[in-house]
Length: 573
Ligand code: FES
Ligand code: MG
Image 1 (tube, protein in one colour):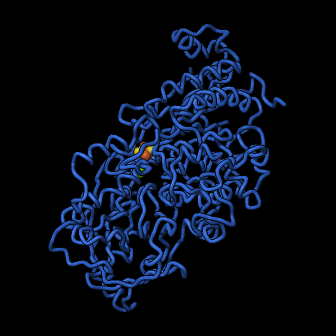
Image 2 (image 1 turned 90 degrees about the horizontal axis):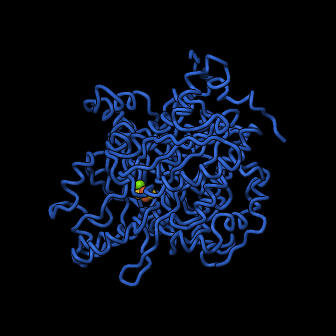
Image 3 (image 1 turned 135 degrees about the vertical axis):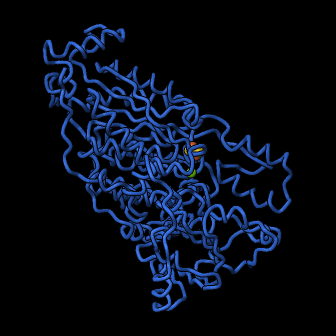
């Protein structure tokens, strides 16, 4: 049922005001379109994060052509808008420093142009939350189209996943069990084609959450990058978003509290990235939901890990896809999902998974045969009054309750300089602490939370130990890593007050993390503490450090997550 006519289109403000529209009409003609190709048609903006500096998105220019095909077929007018790409590998100090930049860019690209509907092309880690955050705030009809994941590989006869495989073999290189030649062979296999990491890292987690919350077409997040279905789904999204414009279906119609809760439940059932604990809170706040870190912890206790995918499990995304992918996994959880949530397909989540089935019961498990019991736990205590997170499903069971002496690294440089030193005084019971790597301290909260196992211990065969930081870790990482300590050390959080030789007690079953130092001593240390000189005195870095909130709040800017209305641009021409 069509709710809008051509006269109601947002783009009519540019194109439909008689002689005043001349400049806009003439530019469309200049671009080589004839009047019947654009007049009265919804203009569909394709926000494309293709870039030579993001090989995970190398195929997105062709993908955009498939979207355009669909948009034309449905009577729309497609236009491609390039946006900052945030290739996870190259962007320093961390792509997280720029997630809000891309979110802001997405929102403003849509606002300042005559756009009626939106296709978002992303996939590599931060691109997904960033594009969605911007689109949520702009609230035009939107579909998110994921890039798909890179080809699979094996190494020394073992299944080898992006990131996870390299992390698994890195201590062997440090310990001298792997030659440099073999390591270079391995480097070739981490990403063997365009596409995002092929394990349940941040990319696969966030694209799955986009689908779970109803913002992608059904099944889209479980398709490999080089699979022709990617083009078919892109064209289908192009057709569908034109209809969404006429029907006026916006993110605010899709992203209810229940949709966010569905996404959180799926996140833990996937054994998803710890980064979801930041991005989903940021997305929820943009959408006006009060979803919190505590809610995530409660969901983590209720729902076990069903996806047997690295780093929590054995397989990679291709096998997850062949086993039925996300729609099949959702059938296992149907009693725990709000199946009446609407999705961008125009159908409910429940309708979308009708007919889906699990093809391989070892890859997609049932609730009575899970891979692990907990994918995410939120800990609190005097070391992290506002919380921190750990991924038990990718950690060591024997370290879930542990007390040990602290070895401190003051920042990422200090870590790099000393972690493999033969003089490092450390044993396998030590607790490694890395600080000044949070949202402001990093700056940008880089993924150095999976602190390497010191060489002196790696050589003795130690492969895991308790590590604590205010950083994040890659979703492809694993190990007993306590992350996102909030408030961060850079702003004087308790992590800043830890001293060499202190003891820290970790108790995951009871959700506590305790610095074994008296309150009085902590107060005295706090009085002694002085902040470091700021990283930035100008530019984006200064804007970021003045506005970014803490990890438990999603690291968004309050000026962006605010739901206050923003006026439409004045059209003078
Ligand atoms: Fe791009 Fe992992 S590096 S998705
Ligand atoms: Mg990453």
